[in-house]
Image 1 (cartoon, rainbow, N blue to C red):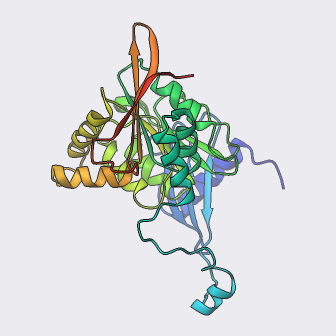
Image 2: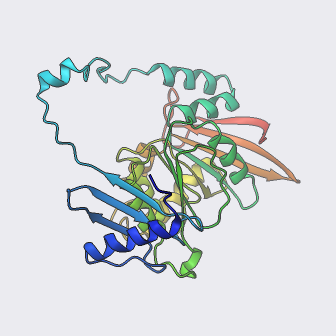
Image 3: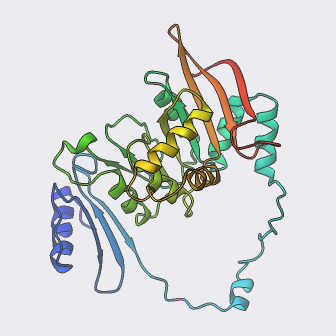
Length: 299
């Protein structure tokens, strides 16, 4: 196969755009189209990707037609369990670490178990530091797609795509976090990492994690785990998609989609984790059952 250089990939992107009667350029860097063989293609170019990078995802529709008996013969139902409210082995490990106050182990297990994690805190409270530490525990075989306004995250997993938007719409690209989130769904991610929840992105983020894309890690500006939910409620109300929801509906949606809130604090130049909310903790309510980590440092 000849080398797929940036120039060749850009020519391919423009050819697909022409074929589908669309445009792709610096101002419109995202393209969704259908190829002649009914394959779906998703293309993202700079400045919505790293300089010199073109992301191309092709999804071929399955032509296989299985009956239930065929699925059973192929082991489709072999690992199925009835959902009765009982905890899984992973949840039991998480509950044990949480109740014992082993928060380093708890957060590591939460990442591996694909829990949706919000890191909350004020500016300069080590939110990004903790986020980067957690990313190291995402399995190497997972496909990770990040959405950032500045290249802060360090993603070591080999199969990853980094998407970018300009804060305040100041750059050439017209693609914002909402458009990039919608593009992510068509790019076959195992995990979607949004650098920060702000403005109207919260609704689309929660919608995505509630629709089959668990394991996300993101941050929000708030002064406690409880206030993180209040802040997210306001952000959802500010969004175009979430403005029609009432407060109770939004809170229900948030508590369905968010598993963990880790609160970072800066005090007299020291960074530490002050509290951790875990949705599945025994007797956990909407806001209560906050575990207070006694000056647990963020390394």
